[in-house]
Image (cartoon, rainbow, N blue to C red; front, side, top):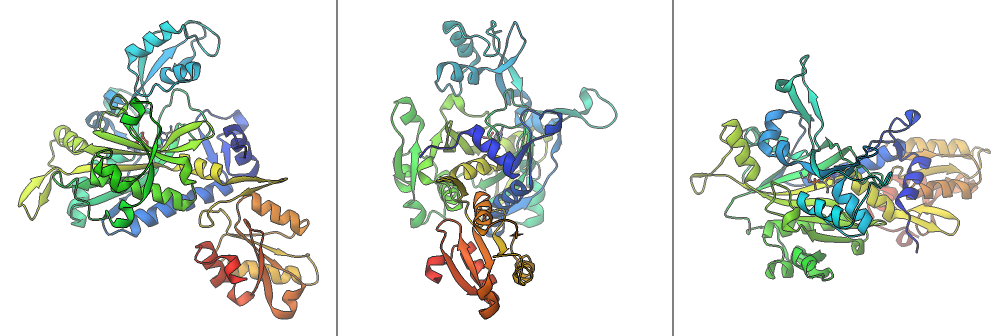
Length: 504
Ligand code: GAP
């Protein structure tokens, strides 16, 4: 089946009210997108799932919500002022600026992740690469810092520089001691945060894939430095879980990715630490549970030259987008890099006192980092299904913007009054959409297209026996249910504890 292209999904999102180009009445703003009514619901549901699963349901993870504007000292210590850069080339004729590695990838159709500035210059010269916009000659490469700079207070000088955070992680490290002191949580434990981040991407592209303002959901998971291979949560179920694995070695040797049990990846030394393996499996499985096709997921290890300045080892969870395998989730072993840097620059003690050993240690960190918008995009692409003349958005019911469509078969003979009563009731628990306009077939199709998993219809039989039909978006099957049982049945259907078939 032909997959939807990124341009088509952007058009669909705009047409149905999921996502709009930001300030479109002024021509839009590259790299910025606004979520419309349906998109805002879907995005909130994704975030809620993440927060419920990884913060509320776990005893070992605490959540925080920190500022998005952060002082210069934080980013100096973290290494971002120095190293959070992308390679940039400019056109000598039209002055357009291009991200150098993307320009090479687009021109030659190869991946050059982690390429050095010297290699960029060599490749541009060797292949006589020109400006994609006007064909002009390109400058040699420089580096461009991706952080948005601002000034805090009335004075705009270097002493008042601050940055819009480019990752949520740093405020977890800067709050580490306060969280330890106020919560008295013990290692191993995680601190989680979700929120907006900002990156001045040189060339934002591919719709929600590369934006300048987006959201992250991150966990910094702290482990005793000597216990990075002692993960009590590596149960048999997780060890047996199969992942598509694409290690640095496989990439170097031009091998294909391999489907592998987590335990085998650990035994073969492909994934080097137990905690890294655990979190990779947990997030991979979470993404599959949310609805992503497991065949379109893989974990890919960064090549050494590709790694961020803070990372000892990094694996991305990649999704097979219509434009190729791309990262939707980054997971680095940040070791004790960040805590040590902040200790050095702030002069404060950010160690953890181990009660058993009676000594101070600096914990090591595994960081599962999930982009909200890239996940939103992948889920939409995966759910988008063309069925003959109509589109069905097969979203996991728990993520769908509306859970239930409520219709009277016709808007007369009192059916509309009963349907409005049903709608009023269901609205207390589920996001619902009431519709009495057009043929019933058209109304079903409209809900299918925006992913509403169930539609409840009031018809003439309702007046006789107080039953309504529930229709399933994916199978189109319908069953009759007493109105008083609707909430209970819909609750189970949405949680996928039961199917309509089993009820019928
Ligand atoms: N704290 C680690 C960190 O920020 P990252 O790989 O740079 O790591 C993590 O980002 C996630 O944030 C990515 O996997 C992706 O989902 C999302 N992300 C990164 N840059 C993005 C961009 N320009 N637009 C949309 N999402 C982005």
